Image 1 (cartoon, helix red, strand yellow):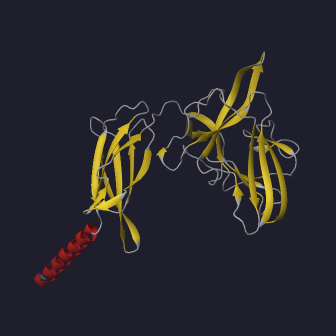
Image 2: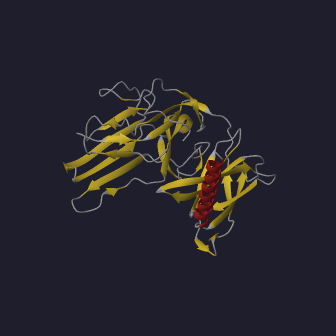
Image 3: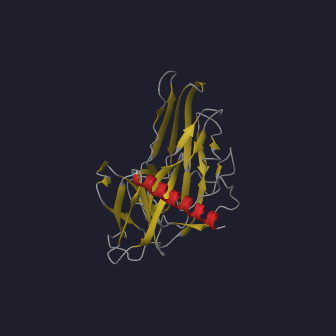
Length: 322
């Protein structure tokens, strides 16, 4: 028994030494995170997470470090690891936020710059409201017919008569396409709006990092365009022409009401990601987008994920805050 214990102890020591030796093959990295609110004030006692990583046996292994921000909102962490570091913060009453950082170079066994001062912003949870929220990416809409303007009701979630049970043309889609094959086609999708003050505007924001709560808290009062056109073109032997953008999002205004030529009220909403379409594998085209519509006639864009006004959504259609 004693001999067995000695052998096991030796094996354990070797494993620890090998592990330490392996870790030391990576440069030492350190970062400092300052947690701030939207006004730039430091947030104390936020939970901060820093994730270094190592590549072990063909897989990435996380090296997690965590703790609370101090009185000036700061927390630091260091470890041996690769060039990439992820970090995030959370606190009750705020939306979680996360980001990532890549060191520039390694010198004398350390990643440089050493201990960069990074900031992360937590957005306060203020007044989340019920919304009609749905994702069509895995359950796409199919345009009933090409070459015609067809209204789509965002509340009923259907095309308007005679193509569906929708009652209001919130978005008016028109598909124009010249289709030879999946390898050769030209197509345009136009989104227009029926009422005078309706419209849409682009908001560029990276959705992969930052706060869970994306885009503006309140929809702008001005800056809406009456029309948006997307293009998808493919020619044999050439790269696809695609007008959609990686960081493009939208805020829209629909069902606007006016009196004496002035806007009285309207419904506002947002689209996270671009509005995309694809004519391949369809007689017309399929449309992909994720939208949130606030029906209370305020400009509030803060969605309560526990109060989605759509019932019985498929799992592929459900959305959260993001």
